[in-house]
Amino acid sequence: MKINSYGSSKGYPLLVIPTQDGTADDYERFGMIDALKDYIDNNIIHVFCVDSVDKDSFSDIHGDKEKRIQLQEQYFNYINKEVVTYIHRINHSTNRILLTGNSMGGYHSANLFLRNPQTFEGCICLSGVYDASYFFDGWMNDLVKLNSPVHYLQDMKEDDPKVKLYQDRSIILCIGQGRWEEEGLATQPILTKEFERLHIPVFSDYWGYDVDHDWPWWQKEIVYLLPKALAKVYSHYPYRKH
Image 1 (cartoon, rainbow, N blue to C red):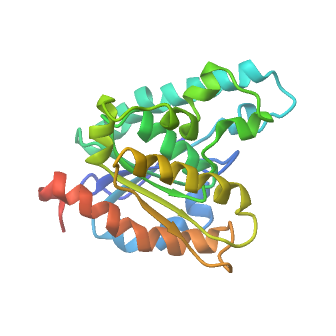
Image 2: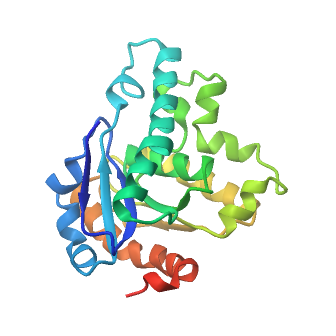
């Protein structure tokens, strides 16, 4: 599994999960690193990009469903154990890591953060689909539910210990209302409603009807939304403020 890094350890760690079936190279290839150039060059963020296993998990529609979701769980554990350890070593810190991703990367970012808020500072999720059963034609088992934010949040009670952690983190959801955003538009309001039910602050943003599920818009969205996430970072790690 490949990991690319951009910037220096002076910057705050930002972990990027790629789009569906994507690789660690895609964030740079499609202009996102250029869009964040000022933040990287000025040591505000230290960006890490990883590969995905979506081709064999969420995208393998003809594969065995149980094996597919088991592979997703292995990927979740890989990020939490190996990637997090690697980032802390390269970034020379034990700071909680900020997550972001576009499309399925937005889903992965939300799922990683919500299942492990002790490790992650928050998430900036662009154009995500937050119902894992969507990728299994509605099929559900315990492991799919464990990886499906709209389902496990609906079962969460206000006294769950994770709720207090969520309330102290930065949660940002953003989606356009243009082409190819239909699935995300169906699930972002559900996730937002559950955050509100649990009194968890969330910035849930809907861009215009001309805003498509595509890289040029994600470049604009991340530049607009990153400062909102960094404001929470600075409240926790004031020495990181530039």
